[in-house]
Length: 87
Image (cartoon, rainbow, N blue to C red; front, side):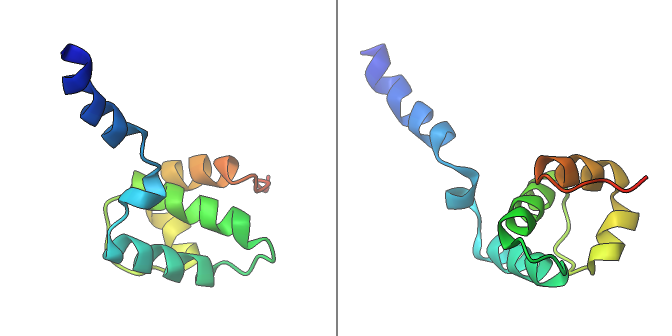
């Protein structure tokens, strides 16, 4: 019986983050990806999803503004996406 009660919670927490994104989040992520002049859009997508999950802003910022406004989140998401951090 407990398993039946726990199963819905388990399913909710196992849904990928992309499936839980609102329309505003998806719009923000698409804008973010378009701001990154990187040929690897997969990395840009990973970075922007990470930033959307890490920060709380609906403002559509340019890439450089994201870097300046949220330095710890930017660096963590930059690494997660596999970008090289310049020295």
